[in-house]
Image (cartoon, rainbow, N blue to C red):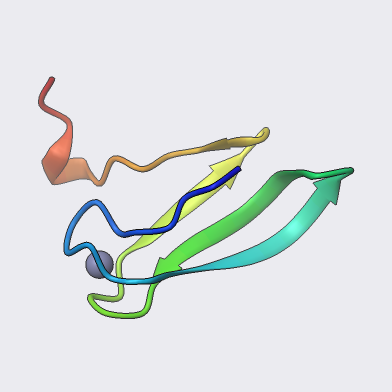
Length: 56
Ligand SMILES: [Zn+2]
């Protein structure tokens, strides 16, 4: 998984791993150091869409 920039502000992201298997993060949080936005990772899938950005 390579998620390097925040979709909101393009700031640097920090990955906080709760559980991982091999090279895959199963549960965790991706947090932006710049705007403070956080994105949950559940079942190995990061949710990079904040509620106000769910337009197609
Ligand atoms: Zn940000």
